[in-house]
Length: 382
Image (tube, rainbow, N blue to C red; front, side):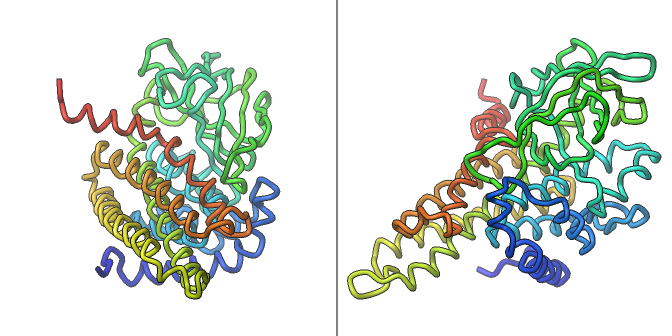
C-alpha cells in the first residue's frame, strides 16, 4: 500500500536529511559509539543545514514551520540509517525540548535562547528523572527555595539525555510541598556555580548518546531563568508528553522498518543448503509477519501525527502509539537478528547495535506499563 502521508516538500526534506547523514554521521558513527559521545559539531552542522528548530519562528533563526511531519521525516531517516544513538540527541532537542521554549518562554528568553537552539550553538536537555522518581513526576524531590526573586536549587537528576553536551537544561524542581502544584520549571545553564555533571553513564545501548547524572548544590537561578509560572511545572510537563511519546513511536516503527530492510537484504545474499536463506519457508513467514506489523503500525502512527498537527491527539492515543510501536520494535529486531544467525551478534552489523538500542524505548518516555495504565483509566472500568 502506498504511503501518502508526506507531500513533495517532506520528500525533498528527506533527501536532504539522507545526504546529511551520509556526509556528517555515517563516516564517524562507530567511533562515536566507542567514545560514548557524539561531538557538539554534529549539532552545529545540523543547525547549519536547517535540521534544528524547524518550528522556531524565522525571526529567531528557525524554519518557521509548525508541521511536525518534518520532525517525523528526520526521526525516521536517522533510524533507517542506523544512527539512532547520536540521532536521539537531535530528536530530543527538536521534538521534546523545543515545545517548552516555544510555549513558555518570555520574549526576552526567546531572544536569548532560540537563535542558539536553532543554530546548534546551544544544546538542550530536559531533567525530570531522579534517583527516586521516574514515571511518577509527583515524586520529584529536587528543591528550589526562594531567595528574594531568585531560586536556590539543590538535588540531583539521572538518566539525562544530552546531559554531557547540554548548555540549557529544562529542570523540574519542587517549589512547594504540594503534590502537583509544587513543581516549577527552570533553565539551568552551563557554567552556573553549583551545577555539576557526573559520569557519562555506561548503558546497554545507544552508546553514542551521552546520558548523564546531574547534581545541583545551591545553584542560584535568577527569575529570568524561570520557565513559565512558579507552580505550573507539572502542567507543562504533562501537556508536552503526547508529542514526546509520538517522537518515540516514530523512532520505534522506523527502527523496526530498518531491521526489516537490513534483514531482507541479508537473507537474499546469505546461502545455506545450496540457496539463499530467503527461499526458506520459515524466513518468508517471519518476514511476512514483520512486514505486515510494520505497515499496520506505521498507518496508526501517521494518523496520530496528523492528529497532533490539528490539535486533536489525545493522551490515550499517544500512549497507544508509544507502547505499541516500541514493543513492535523489540519483537522485530529480535526476529531479524535471529535470521542473521551468528553474524547478528557481531557489532559490525547494524542489527546488533539496533538490538541493544531498542530495549530502552519501552522504558523512557513512560514505560509500557504506564502507557497501559493511562489507556486503561480512560476506559472507565470502575
